[in-house]
Image 1 (cartoon, rainbow, N blue to C red):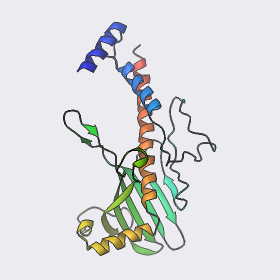
Image 2: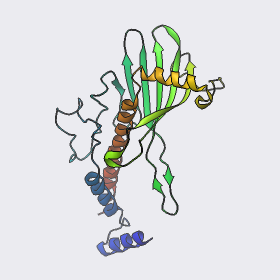
Image 3: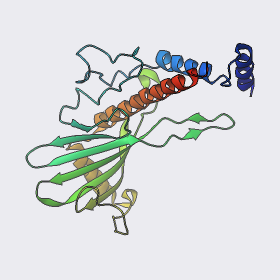
Image 4: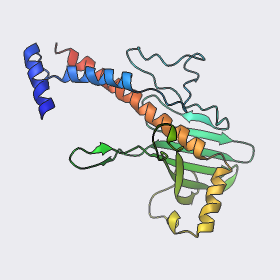
Length: 237
């Protein structure tokens, strides 16, 4: 309430008719551009920008970087639209194809009177298929940040939450039986299925790279949303 009162008083003194929205939006833009920086585990080198150049922070609208990781050369980007939430990667050889779809899990809050956002997780779907062979094997996974702060923070990792199969990718839904929950499977089978994924490059490095990229990408999208809002409310001045 105190912040709202200050904004209202400031807006009244300036004669603004937007309730102080423009000032608040500009303050938030400045905060985002000054307080956040790309994660060191996320390389910003990608085809949209020349080598050794970061994306143009001072441009009117920011173009989020494409997913790229020098530590994971086997995967290539299938889809990573600047305004989209989903990233799709592919790893393919003569005998097998692995598709990974990832997007951020919904934002959650924790705490009492002034709840704070919890660290974001990423929801991953991994499809493993062989040419001319059905069905397609699907792994549902959840990537999460490691515990700790700063240099002591552990690397991100992921858990498998479900394993199912379909006649083709996207054939889920309806009233089809899709198997038991992963956690109720025999522990040895759980380990074997996780090893199956690790052997196909779906490891903690990939989970960490995707999670950091998605968080960073959403920040860029948020700043662009703020800049659009700034344009809208600046017309009232």
